[in-house]
Image (cartoon, rainbow over all chains, first blue to last red; front, side, top):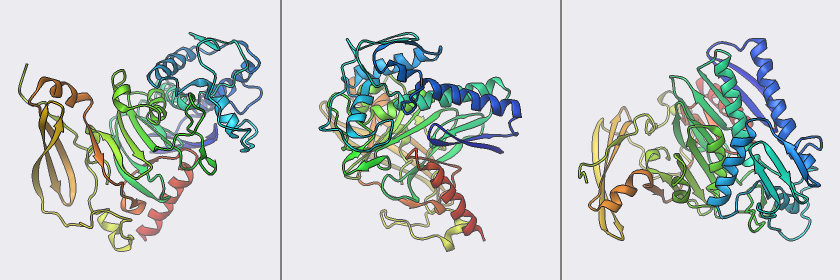
Length: 283
Length: 137
C-alpha cells in the first residue's frame, strides 16, 4: 500500500492506494480539493459562497445540486435544526471567519431557509444577508469527489481519509477505530469498513469556550449537548457526513425512514445507541 | 406474512479483538474500563436470547456469537417477531443500547484507521503509529 498525504480544508488527508499515485493523478486530486474549497469555504473572503453574504445569486458546480438536495432533506427531517444557514448562528457564538471565538451576544437562531434562500439545482440565491456553512456535508462530498476521481484515474482500490471522514473502495476492508469522545489515545470500538463511507461528528474538540462548540441547532442557535459523538456508515461520504451531524439533531428512526445507513450515537452521560448491524462494534 | 425469522450475519463487523493483540499484550496498559472480564475465552459458538417490551407485547431476539482464539469471528442476530409491526421495524429500525462506553488503548487494537474528531485525527493517527512502533520493539 502507498500513502499520499497532504493538508487541506483544515484537516489532514491521507489516500491509500496499492500503487503510488502518478504525479498527474496527485495533481488532479489537489486541484479538485482546491476548487471545492474556493467555492464553499466559509473562512475565505474570496470563496464563491462568501459572495452571497450581502444577498444575491451564485452558480455552483454541477455537484452543488446533490449537496443542496441533501441539505434540504435533512432540514426537513430535523425541523430546521440542520441548515446551511447555520453559519449565522455559529458566527453569533464566535466561530467566525476570523476565528475570533468571542460570542457576539446571546445565541441566535439561523434565518429560516424559506424566504431567505433558494437552492434550485446549481443556482443559489440569497434574499437577505446570509452566512452559508455547508461544513456538515461538504467535506464528505469532497471525499466522494476525490474517490470518484481515483476510480476514473485507474485506482479502483483506495481509501480516502479526510481527518477521520473516509470512503473505502475495493476488495479488502479496513478496520477503523472509533475515537473515544473524551479520552484521547483510546477508542470505544472498531468497525470494519468495506465499500462504504464512514463519517464522524463530535462536539468534543472543536470547542472554544465552556459549552460552545461547532455543532449548533440552527432552529435555536444553541449548541447541542445531549449527543457528544456520532458515526455513520453509508454508501457515500456526503450522505454519511450529513447524517452524522443530523444525528445530533434528530432521532435515528426519523432519518432511517429516508436513508439507508448504520450509526452509533454517544450521549453526554456516556451511554451509546447503535443500529443492530453494528452490534459488537463497541467494546 | 412469513413467520420465518430474518437472519443477517455481521461477520467481520464483529471481528473485534476481545483481548487485544496478543503480541503486544505484555507491553499493553490495561484497558481503561470495561466489565472486568478479560478471558481467555473458550472457542465455540454461543447463543443467547433476550427479550424486550414493545407496545404489542414481549418480543425476543436471538444472538449467536462465534469465538475463535479470543476473537469474535461471527455474530448473527435472529429477531423472532411475534407481531407484524415488530417484524417490520426490527429490520431497518432495530437498535441497541450500550449503557456505558468503554475505552481501550489504541495499542491494543489492530486497526489501520481512526475515525473521530476531525481536527485531531491526524495527530491521533500519528500517536497510533508511534505507540505501535514502540510496542513492537
